[in-house]
Figure 1 (spheres, rainbow, N blue to C red):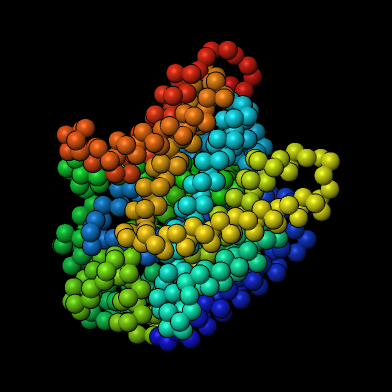
Figure 2 (figure 1 turned 30 degrees about the vertical axis):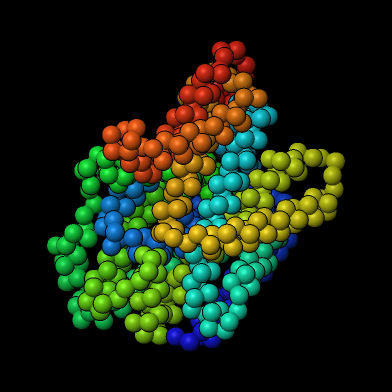
Length: 489
């Protein structure tokens, strides 16, 4: 594929997104931006969330990861399913009962001002870093296969991508994203299916035959029983469960889409439907990854990083049609994580820190201008973070993403667990210090884990350790004074 063709496909896809934006952003207001006026169909949200939750990280990192980790990621996916069940039965009823726009409003009602700001602050840090990594993955592919050929600097590539995201989310917000996610999920899943077909065709074996070869090989190994291994199956399962609870249930971006549905029962239908489909889709990505590994072994394909395996084979070995399919799938997987993150960060900062929703005196025009400024400011933060990640691109992006999640979402897990499962009250002013101390302690434990714990290596379960330390810190500074709170209602 030529760089010009790749760039043309990127622009054509972007034009489709703007067509959707034109329709959905008409007559949009603050409630449209924040919660879609609570008229989003639950089945549309469920389908669109597949693309939003998987993103470009899953599209490239998970297939490339199979050569190193086999199918062990499937245990994480099983954990995801049970995590979504917890969200549907525990967290969604809470959010709907309190009629929240920002889910961190719960922390203010349960604990107080400083706990509220701490929770919202950790979400902002988590989402900025996670979304920046996801965007970097896609932008880097465009740089390698398009912009390097034209001698265009990386920062220009980043600027173009982020400008497009700003343009189609600035007005419509979540109401636009609900529908663009649906379009993007369709193309992403189609790309996976067609890529599997093209690889099987190149290898000269039908898909069923290749599946047999796959399950006869070590690539299909799901269960690792060595307890000291960071991917022991029990660690993977519970890590997946709590990663879901935190990165979806305690995440404004993902919950904002659920809260755009009018009724709790429909939001729960969305979550149960989405969780079931998600397990199947992850398995599809692992099968794709195994086929890529088999193809690379037969053709002698080598790459410097596992994340490069899929694009290298798609662009250089499978022909132009397969390259087009890959590119559309990658872009489809990338946009949902970028647009949703930017919208949710704008929502959280505008409501949780600027208090725009509570301000009944300020005119709507001024609120809109402030929201636009916040939107653009976070886009600038993304720009800077992506340039930084460019300098430290040394391992699979999905590995980095979950490592970051373990440190930044852990305090949120501890805060919500304490609020939901105890009736104790905390020393509100101490909460920020506890939330900051927990990730620092976890970082030290991770560095010296083999010396301290007889060879034990932490994996994604560091999230649980972080949440536990936050919970215990809150417990130490808690008291039994009773007052009305959402968790006691």
